[in-house]
Image (cartoon, rainbow, N blue to C red; front, side):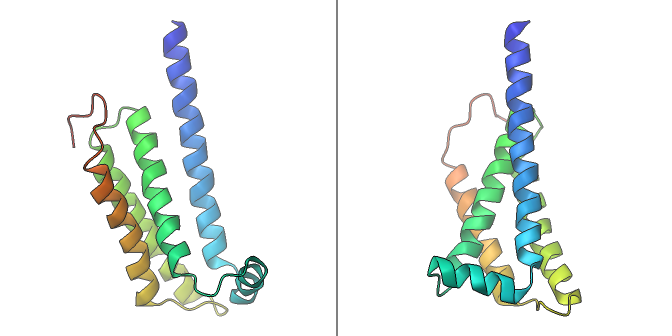
Length: 132
């Protein structure tokens, strides 16, 4: 009984982290461009391309962990679909906000991060994951 509780607790923690991260991404990507510019200036970031790639690489990874911990069928496929959907929704929201603008360049960077994770994931031997 104890081991089931530990597994359930672990999957809940991973799920919480994934959801908090997803909310954080949405929040950051819809902030005003001026606010992000100030953050980038303080951090010494000149080009945010790497941050776009890294953000969606991490998102795909966290979703994969979440779905694997919850024993969902085809966790890699599901995490990829949700990550791609999040990338599209973020750009759609940015298109509708007067202080932001959507670009295909950003979508390409998001997809690059997701694709990089998927390629790496295909070489990771996940335990008891024969669905992918």
